[in-house]
Length: 207
Image 1 (cartoon, helix red, strand yellow):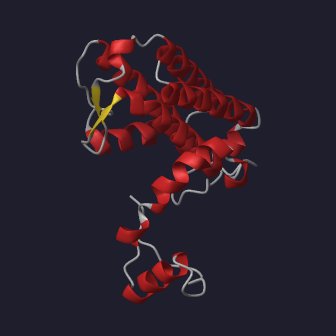
Image 2 (tube, helix red, strand yellow):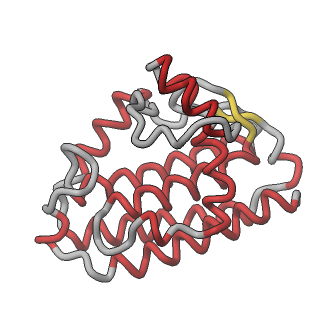
């Protein structure tokens, strides 16, 4: 196995383990609280994490068959419908769903034959990505949405290995999200040590 893929699998497994600890505090009352995502309760975030795990299982199985499959049946609308349908379940049901699907993903990665890692899968955006890119994709989902739960785990708790990979990706989105020409100039000059820090910046949504 490629060592980078192995490192991503290990990072994902560790992120799952940290999430499982947080799930110990989820009660029915907690599941109905607002999360840090506008319009989503904690239950929505948990439902999303479970259905995202299913989406990885779906693509892993497709890659093993050498078949490109959609990440979510029905695309973005299907994804949203599944989350809404599951968000109001009891805390016990939500937690069991997240636990079982995360464990299934961890087990499925370890059973992927070497030749399948280079096969392509289709993300909800329509982009084709190799299976080897999915372990970090899942790791990213877990780290970010763990913090979105608002249950004591925050961005300050993200692992150093995760930040080392995600920070360059996030920074690469700035040129298309920073629309103010003067702010773009000052940011560029600051990075080149030719101007003071531009301070808070107004960025377009990252999605």
